[in-house]
Image (cartoon, rainbow, N blue to C red; front, side, top):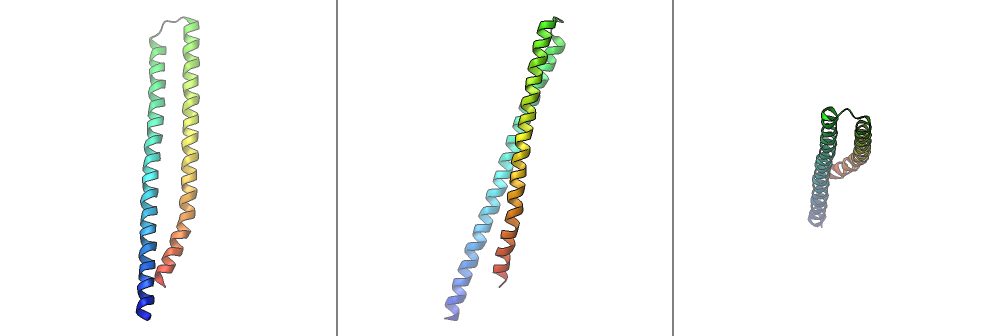
Length: 114
C-alpha cells in the first residue's frame, strides 16, 4: 500500500516536473520570438527612415517635394513610435505573466518537497 502511494506520488511529481519544464521552454520560445519580431520591426522602421532622410538630403530644394518628404518621414516616425509602443505593451504582458508564473512554480516546488 505504501509502495503504491509512493509510486503514485513519484508519478505525480514527474508529471508536475515535466509540465513545468514544458512551460519554461514555451515561455523561452515566446520571449525569443517576441525579441526577434521587435528587432525586425525596429530595424525595418529605421531603414525606412534612413532611406527617406537620405533621399531628403539628396533631393532638390523644391519646397513642395521637400514638404512631401518631410511628411513621409513624420509618418514613418509615427509608425515606428506605434511599433515601439506595441512592443513595450507586449513585453509588459510577458513580464506580468512571468510574475504570475513564479508563484505557481513555487507552489509546485512546495508540493515536490513534501
